[in-house]
Length: 91
Image (cartoon, rainbow, N blue to C red; front, side, top):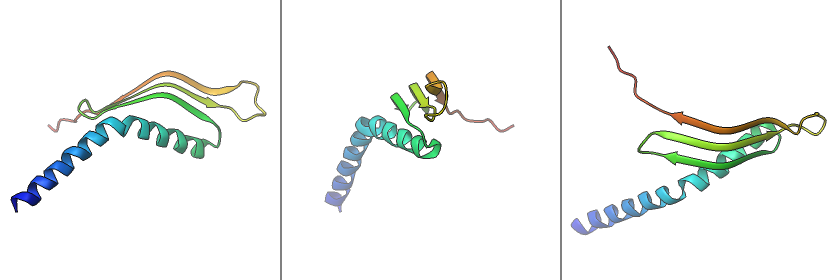
């Protein structure tokens, strides 16, 4: 029984390390591909930083291009976006 518990704890520790190291690149890839499918135009995200302990998401340098028949190259250019999730107190 103890052996199974140690194996499960080891697997959970390995999973936590993998999520810690690979959450940002995987999140950036999926956010960028989802936005491109949703908007049907090229979207570029330079940096995505997910902080689970701070409950925050930081995205830097987002560029959404216009379709070819528009005058301006970019529909949206954003240098910094920060989303921070907090708790709501109930009175």
